[in-house]
Length: 589
Image (cartoon, rainbow, N blue to C red; front, side):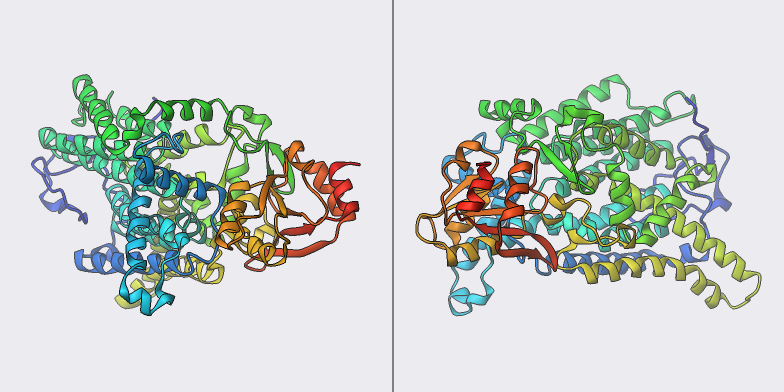
């Protein structure tokens, strides 16, 4: 198959199943040849021995709580996006009519959790405490985004556990810290979208799968079965969060790598695989019962066929590209996510990831490296060459990026410590040298997150040159709440407002007690014909498409903005109050 597998000596009767892994005592090992040796030989040293259970629990608690603090700070400071408002509408539809096909192109689990959060916040807002302290009211924006922030913070633990299974506790702790403090990841965890939930359950799937591998290879194939069934349940929850079926191929392909090895004990077999996927199906229906609603299948078919894709293009590095999945290489460029990785991670994280990729070729790293091979390779094949891309899709790759970076950071730290050991005899100094590099990289992420908040999606490192390369995803409609508040204060009764996100326009008009305002679609020629002098046009950055590009270009040449929009100091677009000249330019008259 082109792989060279590591052969390791492990205790033949080992049945350890630690949540926080420890290394076996090699002095008591007996000669039992097994495959899939996940314990990395490369990084066993003094610093690893210091990371006992108590230290790891304290460190993880700090990472989770601090990471949650970043994710929750100012979480309601931005208005809802088009996508988030669709989730709110779906939850309200469920509450009014029971299970329906609302937002049926996406599974039910995340929307159920959002519903719990919304109902809880509504009850909270009706308490006597809130009546006397209205400043403690939880806005809809906060309650809708809170579940993602919680899940994102808890994902820190799963990244540690998966990385520790593959490469040891030190690499796991570094990877967990990079996730906890990465500005881009924090930004994705603060929006009400499926990706944060999906990667949480994907990592849970991976943890059970890899743990089953370790138990089976340690000589207990029967005891490993419970981890296979737990894997199936977690995989169902993953698919009930977001239907990205190709991600199933990552753990399954990893298992397949070892099946041609005669000595392997990690064998699932056809019968167990049939049972495995039956469990996946049953649990999926339990967690996403809307799959049984016919309207859901219609929505899924429309989405798959591109019939409910909102817009025809996407702005990337100042240029518009076709944006359907089926556009393939004619759509957004294949290097879209490479640019994102290079510009939206802290520079030290980028450098660490680049160094880590060739390090994964080291046999002494352990066979867990094949799991990262599968993840990086299959994800790239599935996501890089389709025509439709969004920056948030990278969430499902970021743990692999951070684990790879952690391997590099630990390798370099150990190299520097060895260099110091030859010159310094004091153990404390050697350990300080070893810890210095991981701390520098992690603190760089902390500093980047601190400076980026609360608009974390706007973060770029120095290589971007101060530009917004992905303006639609960077801004994510955050300006609309403030824009509609200002229009509501200025507009005469019955005024029309043209934008590319009618639902968000109407929602915040209602929040401003201006239900008389009529929201129109800027790309619809019939709606443009309804506009009159005194109406408003929202020219939002990142919302220029092939369908409105010419009209907006003419408007910008002749019109004077009534006011400008911004998000966190970044220009977000202009709002025009139409007169005869600007209206004729918009209509090309």
